[in-house]
Image (cartoon, rainbow, N blue to C red; front, side, top):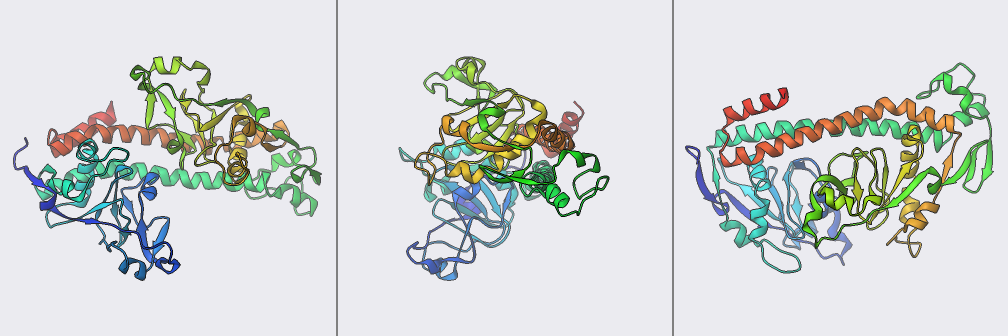
Length: 440
């Protein structure tokens, strides 16, 4: 063990606080000014810090429940369904009963503790109890012991790991901005038909440029709208089905009874991997080559478009690598890769229809492959679809570059995390480790 490190129980380094849920039968307990975090909020949260969740509660709701207002810097830890989601409060907030939160004492750094717990999720789970859903009780959490370096070294370790996470977060925000730009252009061209309407109103003359539309694309847009089964669309455009875009593949989960089917070779995409991602570059699970070969017909090439159709319908992402998905996802392998970005946004634009097109027709429970294949899309002429794909290429390339860089940074962080947290690598060695990794 590294010099000057010392073992502490969680009870010695923090006050452990549970959460609570106000009575949902009283609407006045909610929609107040106090951020209220649930495990669901952290299920798709990517940053170390969190300021608010999906819902707020009122002062009355706080006072009438077991929830407590937690100060900024509190480490939030989910301790049931599931165990191990983590975040740091960036402002005062509260949580539901799915958490045990740590208000740290002096000389203990919140970011270091965040990474310490992140590196020891298996230990947290091993100390839980229960059969259907494991739960880590407050008393069990308080008894857990870990080794801590001096405060200065805690901060240095957190800084190294945090710098990597900050760059990943910066890439995410940059990609989000680029995605918004691409969305706005798609909406203007293919949803609101602004170029067509500008021609119709005499607001656009040949040789002129509209915002986001180069003048050389003038001839690709008609000057009138006509009726269709989807309402008014530009003249000469068609209505197609998803199955016309390319091959439709419904995923499948290999037998979980055969351990050899799972490994670290082929990305296995599930719905959580699609959240907030234009590209799927990393997945929570992977298959072995044997697992992928057992259902070879389900393999998707890079550039396939994945669409969630069960549970959380309407999420859409593009594969980066050869991949497979589970049965909750229908995917399209475009017949023409030079139209991929057009069809990607078209499928995203179907979000609400996907949510209401499943069995029952109201709250979707299962949008079958057959129903998915029959969903209708607006199809401009091929040359316009390709023109959009081509014009968006730099945007998507930049997003993909960010994704790949973040994947490399995450791998570096994950390699450093256990070594730094255990003291196997000291701070001065960690800095050299990063330089060597960057130059490799």
